[in-house]
Length: 171
Image 1 (cartoon, rainbow, N blue to C red):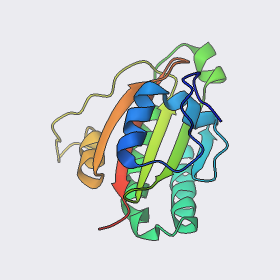
Image 2: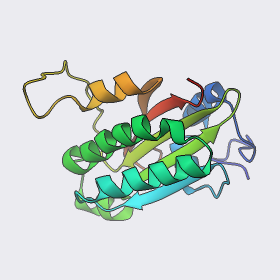
Image 3: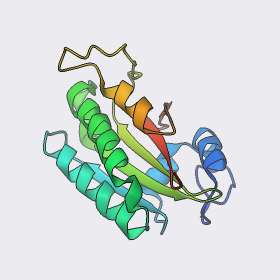
Image 4: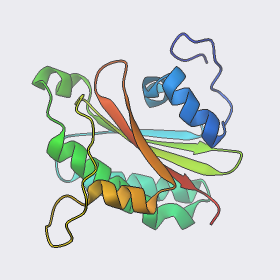
């Protein structure tokens, strides 16, 4: 399967470094619709119970892949990313209907990593704030940064963005 018209093949599991490069060359859009044995994509409605659904999908997928040791950190991070998407993804209503929030988990090789991404229809860039540990809000991206190997975000070709976090399968 070629993705994004680039001619680059994405059938085989890819390394973490190659994946991050591919998201810029191919775009996350290709991973969101790809039918791959090393990926799980789950559309989520823009509602609060989507956070639990995303955690459950993350835990079960990591368990199936033999990476259950990543479940706690990944579930915490996915909770923050989906909460942010549900709460802050402001965009035109037409785009929300056409492009729901989507959870993507991608298993990578060389070394073993998992890329977790949450796509939403908003073009607004995520902004990391200095955490205020007294406030109930504002710590989401700090938590993502703390519990993942690295994180970032990319614009989607279809509009919107994907906020991603990378986890190492070896501790």
